[in-house]
Length: 550
Image (cartoon, rainbow, N blue to C red; front, side, top):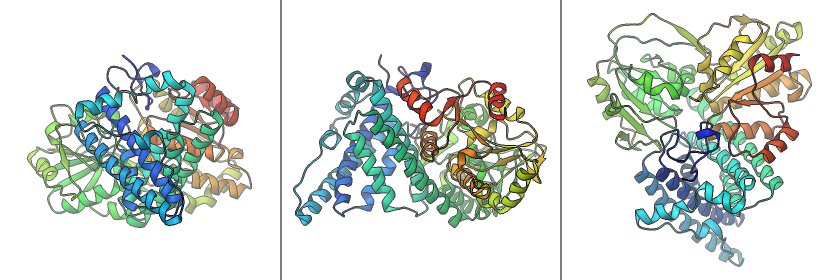
């Protein structure tokens, strides 16, 4: 059986999933997602040409973002919903085509319909649609065009998927930018043309990095303008007695709406995974029944959720196949879907979720209290920048390590725990995303008047780390690569790809990436990345620390 997916770090045998995705995705689901991407590329081809003539449609722009996000790992496993997305994208593609034709007529410009995905028509019959989609799978593309060209094209596509997730997070808060949509359309149009030039595709990948930086800046503004600037906050990580709901994913708005709807019900709300940083936002933490965080990163949910006596809400990517013991208490919302579980619609009426929590037993007793600290985004860290600068100048802080990224289940991720534990006491550790669960409950003490471990937030809060690094470089009158700063990154899915491309766009070198390198990066492409950016796979904590600190 041929490979059908290699977009995540856990891909089977480090090369590609064939029988069933490690995430739980079936071959049919993967093929339908390929079809959704194909029609979305066609939509972008027309929208790009319309935009060049000064015409755009906000509804088309938004659907493009949501179509990309729906195909990110651990988002949508429901084939029928994906088919609905395909149909909607095909309608939007035709609308984009009409928009382009009208704009060309208004400008007196000859119409030049693009080839490729723009002309791909999804079959009306479900079985025929699935049969169509088989011709789009990665293995067949590689047979026709070779692994390097396809790998680079997919690196661009995966980066765009990750950036689309962040753009959607901002969009639900009412923040969007026409220039961001234009860049998405232009880059999708570029790879829809089947460009096989290595340097051209690498250039496109770095353009994705530039785009993602702009998207993360927009999302940072959306989050802080809506919910306030995160502040250092103690978060309980052990349960308290009472009925309960656990919220996973990344979406701040869904959490806020749920907090409002559960006010006065006696239900306690817990965060899970990437939702942990929500406790630091003033407009979220003011709700007293946001009582703490339960569990760790996404990959442990099947084990941990069996111990949670309440209901569950998945707001964005991170869902795994729910176990039968708690499946009837699982609800999804937004783009997240799993066949056979409850889904909260766009009206965001969480009554079924709340009823399920009230019917469940809840925690009978308080567990012994344990707390960790979050909330060290750029707003907080830059507020004490002089303290940090003075600590570096005095020698109290020798080096900064950013240890973070996506967590996952594949072996090799204990490296990050061991690395953090072995970082010398005169070094400051920054962390973000769910990779921090490998070590964030350990006591690292203080340094220069600050905690040695600073939790900067979600994966999208890589923007905070970039802002802090930029401010330090400016203060010391040096470039980013001259700072005593090392990036030790773990990756899992497409948002991590987008962040990596952003760091490369900024020219940051000597990044260590693990636990394994992307399967879509061929030896030829890897050599270019090594030669240009000195990117390296992780080795052992001892060897990497010795190399970094000399």
